[in-house]
Length: 126
Image 1 (cartoon, rainbow, N blue to C red):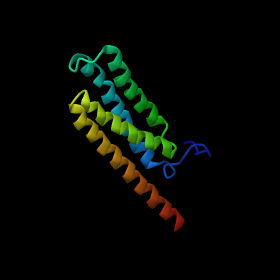
Image 2 (cartoon, rainbow, N blue to C red):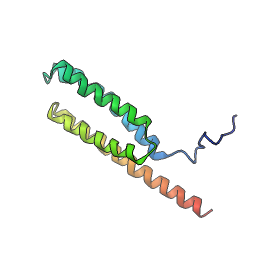
Image 3 (cartoon, rainbow, N blue to C red):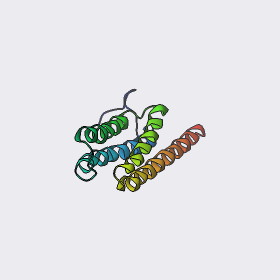
Image 4 (cartoon, rainbow, N blue to C red):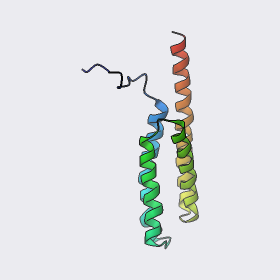
């Protein structure tokens, strides 16, 4: 078994908020990528526009999942949730699916923050 180094966070140092939010963004990236063929075949969106919007949001979601180290990335995550809901103007089901992902994102964000705060309080009392 390897010993943790200064650059390898232990299980207590890993951010639960970051892990949960990254998981939500990764799953959302898959869902957003799958909107591309729906926009083309069902909604009649131009292929180039559908590729830019659907795959662009999917790539942004996946990249953002790996960049959740600073608060600015979480702010972009909230913006991405709004974009996913706004996609409902093109594909009406995205109003529902976007809202579900926004609810999951909000739950992961606020629950993760609560866990981080409680961990910090426990560490301060030691």
